[in-house]
Length: 319
Image (cartoon, rainbow, N blue to C red; front, side, top):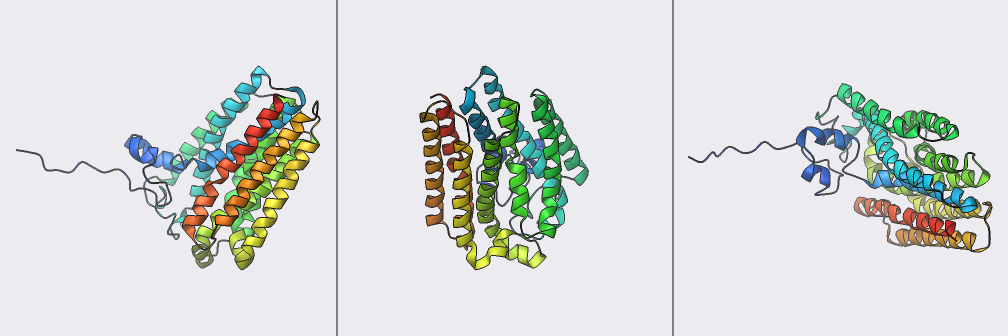
């Protein structure tokens, strides 16, 4: 006689995760809620945290060229971005668990849906942070100190939307810290170009995360969560264009103030700024801030925009 019992199903998919993502398809069931806490099913955030690290490393190397050690900085930066983004997202879900339960897009996340307890999430967060610390302590002392200092920004960010209309600024401060850290890991100091690059990254984050926040503006208004999307309202497109322009000016300033041998490295790097800007203009021409699907698509498109600049900066270091 054939057994007609159904196989047990895993946790229900998270509403805003890409359909058919690798976590839902391939991860062992006991790990699924924890990988979802880390947003492993949505890798775009890891890219947006990692890309400024690539920018910072390449900008520093424009002065004296790549070294063999830089391969480790690039590789470990990616692993560190994965781990620290996971720890940061876990912390965000712990602090936002009551809000997430009231928002359509987020109520299916592991904590509000009951897949993981707060205690389990805390243990998972600490585990990821400890592994990331092992990577950090392979760098020079300046980079180590910068990495430790970034924890304050990670801790504060989830609370920013409770007390300011500009929580995207706090996200930018945290997400682009890797530009300064990677610059320091290569150069052993933090120069003016690194600070310009960091500011460019913050402006870029204001651009893409305002787009992202437009997905939740109606729910956010109901529960009292602040964001630049709500602050700008009908003027959002003008503000977004302003962030595009500011990002490009600051990125150009980072390149112009970098001491490099010859004229070709800065010209190639500036061509990367042009490609970066062209991609954001392409996004703006297709963006509908009142369509959540359009906002999510254009938000995710920023991975390619950021990688374009990273590739040109890397090319400039070999000239």
